[in-house]
Image 1 (cartoon, rainbow, N blue to C red):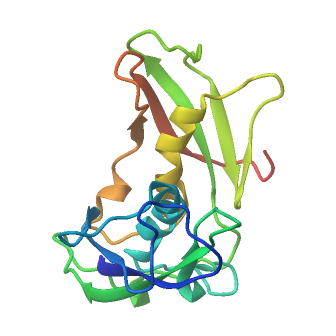
Image 2 (cartoon, rainbow, N blue to C red):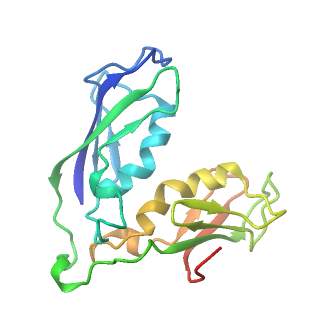
Amino acid sequence: MYDLKVSVTKVLGKCSAHPPMKPGDYITVHDGAIQIPEGGYICLWALQSLLPVLALKERESAEDRSVDWVWRVRHVQCPDPDGRVVYCITRTGEKEPEAPPFRPAERPRASGPLPSLRVVVDEVRGKCTAGMSPGDHFLLHSGRIYMPAGQPFCLYALQAALPLLPAKQRAHHDGDWMLHDLRVLCPDPAGNVYMRIEPWEDEQP
């Protein structure tokens, strides 16, 4: 896995964070952990846009470049249309995997579309305020999320799963924890909704 440095490169408009983000501000990512320099900070709104891309950029993609876009993406902007803080993601080093090393030449590169995933509620160990029940699910097909007609999905549970999904669609090093971690827990400790991420084999959702 790669270490990352995420730096503000430009601010197109007025950043509404207090104090505002400015060019040169940065955070680092090491083995899935975010670190902020002493005295620094990161806008929460911008961070939620960065998170799904960070999990991807930490890893080497084995997908064909004609199918996958990760190899060419280095910039992410915050979701504020009046602020538009632009961040650059730079790989600063590579960590050796703990398990046998990953050798791309030993495995054919995927040339078809990215695999589809299903995120399904496994169990509810508390009282879910959103009324989630085992079997509730949504599908990720390419870069789009689908839900069965008439079946909602809790916003907070969805947010907990989102950062993992782009990385779960792609191949990994043998020693990567992403290979084996299939369950995600919602952020509500009173609800304790456990979700499972699994392949979805149908061509269409």
